[in-house]
Length: 74
Image (cartoon, rainbow, N blue to C red):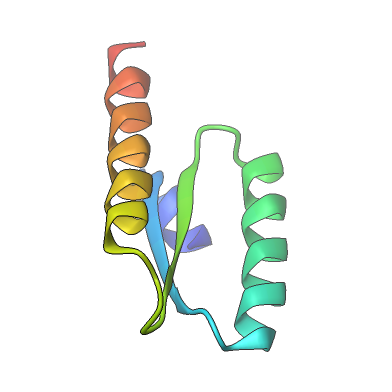
C-alpha cells in the first residue's frame, strides 16, 4: 500500500477475509498508521465472508469513491 500511495495512487480498497484474525488486527493497524503518515491516502478495508452483507460492502466502496471524487476537486 505504501508503494501505491508513493506512486500517486492514494485510493485503495483492501479486501480481507473476515475470519482471518491476523489480517484483521494487523491490517487495521497498518491502515491507521498509513492514514497518519499519508493524510492524502483514502483506504477502505472490506471484509469478505459468507455472512457479509453485499449491500454494506458496496456502500463502503461507494463512500470511498465519493471521498476520492471530493479529493480530486480540491
